Length: 104
Image 1 (tube, rainbow, N blue to C red):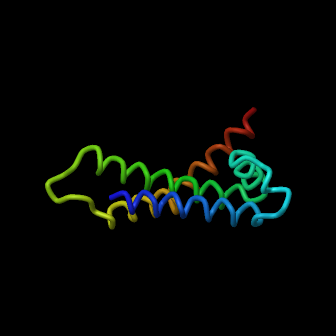
Image 2 (cartoon, one colour):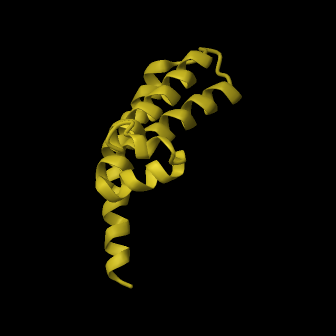
């Protein structure tokens, strides 16, 4: 199980680095939160999709670990949750918050 969580964390870090334009000299001194914020400004939809997918995958991996089933850990289920988070909830919530910001 730890390998699945480590894989998801590694994917999150790789995605954040790719979305922030790579490890340029100026971005090395930035905190991860500053790099994430910069990625949100540059590529809001892509960043939200990646974040939602990673959060969904990590959430499912934790749920399977903390409440173990008789069948054990199912990596396909985690991948499915991550895919649904990235492909469905990321764009849906992005559009929702865009609409809410226009109502202000």
